[in-house]
Length: 229
Image (cartoon, rainbow, N blue to C red; front, side, top):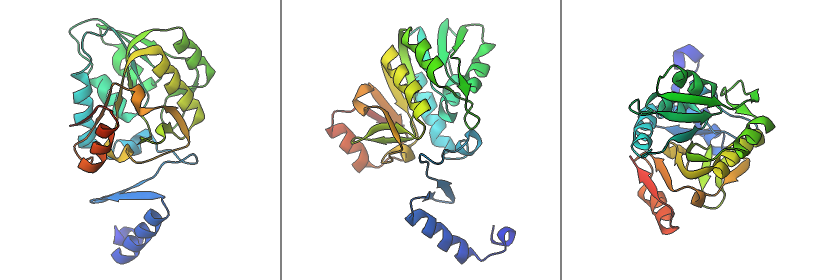
């Protein structure tokens, strides 16, 4: 990397420390990734390279908790695409989604009826937003919603940078009898622009075992069910 950029390794480390101190990136072993805000949200391709093994474990864990539900809402995002790839094929299911990749993944499955919400497609995530999907969701009763977020805290709940995205997530929360949050550990302790739900609105939060014991303990003390896998 230093040779590619034409700078020294120490210059790269110094610049990364500066960006981290300004809250623009987070660093982990061997990687650095941008912090999302109201002005920036990462694309799906970038998300696929952040904690990929953890996201696979989380996707596997939520599949085990679908139970006998017949109608499932699957949110937009890379993590939820991993869930769609693992939807069981042994019984009929109806999947409602605002994600073009999720709909494409499941459309050819003989046991899955896909209902895709209509509206404006966001180029960065291929998620559908604005008033049309929220109107469609208001007329549905869904057994289980599998939802992600850009930030999760006890104080500010579930947040996302884009108000249009938050409106769809909030509508899915209202339309669903059960709700499970899925997300890698780096989502915890972050707050972005728009709140769409409280953590207490979810029956379960599923994340990776990389989340520290101290943070997990705070959620347990608040009465929030959290599983680390």
